[in-house]
Image (cartoon, rainbow, N blue to C red):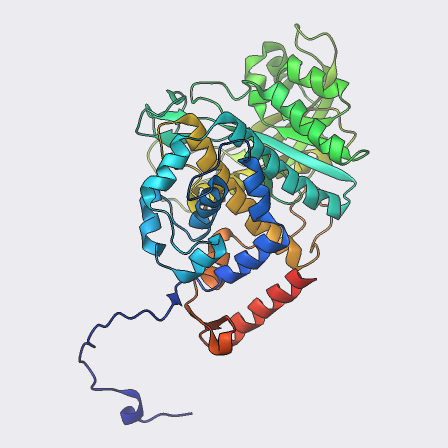
Length: 456
């Protein structure tokens, strides 16, 4: 429909006068979805059990303060002092069951007073919630990925140290080892470590602990493990073999002269596709007691052009090969094996989302247990958003070669923008609590769909 210029343009340029009144307005009306989800999974009660061993008597319970940290991350805030931005929000207060939110000093004090037993119980709760979801899915196999991620800090936090730090060289850091679950894309557990340790430090015990927890809850399930070359060792391979765990591990073949010669001297490679070829053999380093299945892959790739750049459209490219070696006990064809092992790259996406959207890399206090507690709040926020989406609809995928997630998940930032960060007003007409949103067909449809799914 064609509009007239008069009906479109306005001459109103006056700046309105400011007035501040208590209308119980909230900037996070969509947080009501999180409140409902917390009630469905009894999140509040389960958190309080993690701190039951500590003496009571404080105005703010430690379980409530930890829940505020989870909500703090869900709202998109990073530093502790950012809590001042939602200090008077009525819906945030209602979600936490408070009439007045604690000040920043109270939250900081809770982190500084955090103890090892509380951290261990929170870790166990994180794992239990993931296992409960796995139990409801009744999957025939579970795929665990292991890798470390750096948390840098400019301060002298307890337990931090200067170590390998690709982006912030020379900074003190932590280097926790994470176990993520490929089927749901959630963090299963983590091992907190100083920043100056190797990737494999404490890995064997941590891997076996994670596997045992899955087996205790899901007997009979097939367990798969994927790791990079930092975990390649006789100790880890032997432990996985004894526990009847299927594994694939990248091999740092540059360190083994015999293996390099074997690859360089190979004349006949089996063709996988136009770009890739392979061969496999039963091989072992000299110090190993047994032979294992080693699969060597090479991929045809363009070599980097060195020297001055010539603007010649007909200059031919030179091609070379990139090599990859995998040790495994899985009975898969080479094509399936390389696809399966490359699927562990999705873990980098998990780390990226945790750092950019859940602020996993933030170190708030100087005490180690306090920093682990904040890390756990970030992991809970991330896992809960994933769990909420799994609650709303059945899986959209079946098991793939790469073990992609069974759902096509929206990122935390997307849920935050489209659902949580919505304006609303709390009111009590005729004594009935009411949350009023702005009109919007898509928002109305989505919120009603979520509440209907959580009610079943």
